[in-house]
Image (cartoon, rainbow, N blue to C red; front, side):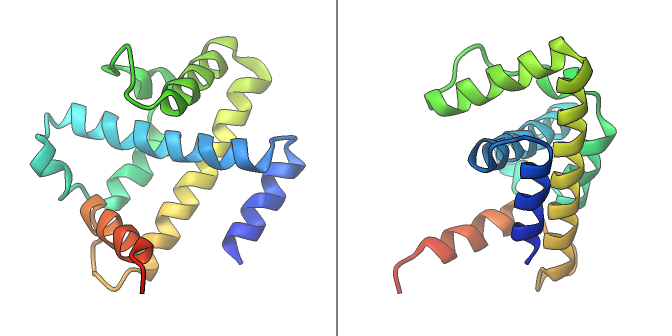
Length: 139
């Protein structure tokens, strides 16, 4: 239900659904990276990063703050391309900046709903990764 609503929003904003979903994924990764960088978390500590903190960063940090400390290159070309688009939207401003605001609101809502529906009282990034991995396992 929520995904259908998100897709309707993306279409209403003139954003291709697949591209919008990918931008939301990148937005989530950027928000998590920014929080981990701010807190000087190690890779092991990242697993314990509360999902709500990432949701707060999605709407609480400026676009350029989310880009701080990123590597120059990415192992996955699709990730690199998505970050480049995010950078372009950030620097162009205007309607592009507005789109990032719309996407950040969608991300925050998705993470908040995910946290509320989690079987764990205060879900972490590690909890989400484990649940996603379990969902991808063949039955």
